[in-house]
Image 1 (cartoon, rainbow, N blue to C red):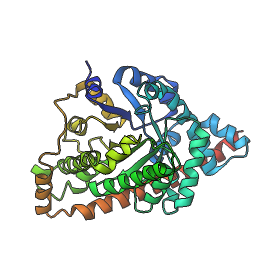
Image 2 (tube, rainbow, N blue to C red):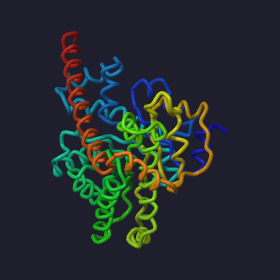
Image 3 (cartoon, one colour):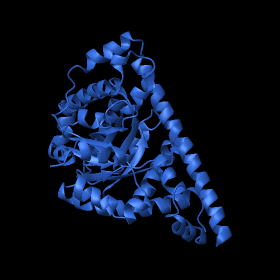
Image 4 (cartoon, rainbow, N blue to C red):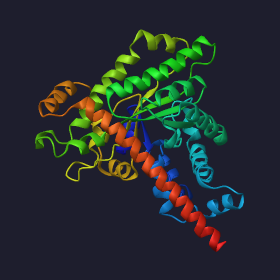
Length: 359
């Protein structure tokens, strides 16, 4: 039995952190579903930027939109939704089999809307309606500015992947926004089940401190932060607040491990996968990490939060300000997505100009 299957059998969902038209057209995504226990997929502006600028597979779709008078952001979302809809259809059996727990595909709203709650909510509603698929997550960053939009989207019945979380405190703020949306639905007599995941980023912690801590602490900060976050997740699920909502029909907002590709070439390429095996969670993996884990990964037991606080104390003694670094990582992540988005819009503009000349 492959390690991917063993991880799935332990109760963790394995999602692919990538989407390209070649993955869809060549049958590779279907093969990952059939052979590597992949039950969902995430995307972001960086992934689409790399997919479109590095391939001619999107040229015909872009040309069709140009002929229909589309341009820029509107053109991009129409092209992206083609991929997203095909992926949601591939994962629909997993969605149906698990009664909506699994089988999800994520698409992010424009990161340029991060400071505008009303526009973020409007964009989320528009993308969800245009896709017309029940197993679509709309991604909204869990930044302080994004939290009100997350609450409003949940209240509106839109399934949300809260992205760009780094610390337990940021996770707790996102979970609170989710809970407020659910509780408002209960008060309004609406169905309280609106699916959501909270995506906490792992590897960027270790990349940020690799030259600032002793060798014995390298590649240990991310896992310690995830241990603390997992403890907060378990505490929430045991709380009277959550159990009341659950009793009235709500389901858990699952914790999702993101950025799980190892960035240190001297560390095991499956480090974050093996260490974060936990039921009722998701691990979304870069394609290379997924294949590496299937080839030579192992599952040696379930993760625990034990020892996380002691390890974090060692980082504090080494001069690492966890709270300040969490804020910095979230801010840098948001700026990175904006940069990728702007580059993506530039790629769309360049391809559009080139195709119009040829056409």
